[in-house]
Image 1: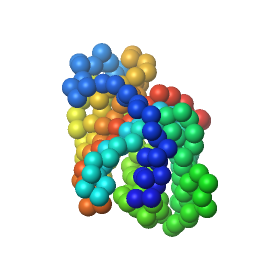
Image 2: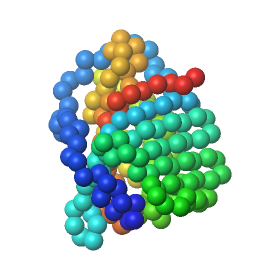
Image 3: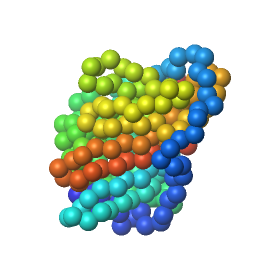
Image 4: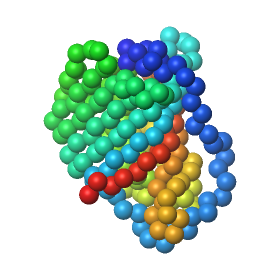
Length: 202
């Protein structure tokens, strides 16, 4: 749980992500299928609630996310924008750089984040989920749409698209995503992501 403790110290300012548990009817009427982008850059805010040593814990901050067809690069930042950690993932390796500490490497991001966070950060799943695509146990990708709100299950996570943004006439993309997963290491893990910027890079 070292990274969680490290981030909790750094992320001391409250961050209001807004929104309530029940979302209003969507104004979007999707007229064209949403495209999946292999190459895209995203940024936004996140909050995490979890248990540590039997006590409820939470942290808030910002993130940036850049992916290509082969790689994923993630930066976790404090509410003031200070870089606290960087994660880099390729098909053959993953690395984690904590501020002021030596670079960590592992064969997979699952191995690396489980060691550092105490739970598996679902980087592979987030490549789809951040763009509004979910791959349930059946293996067939499903595109979430704002006019048909629903909960999905994937990789042990319950995923709910709370709100959307973008071009209401064409291809809206997720604004807020709520995710939950029961873990043996951190109890009920709740992750909320708010996407502020969305930019395909190709």
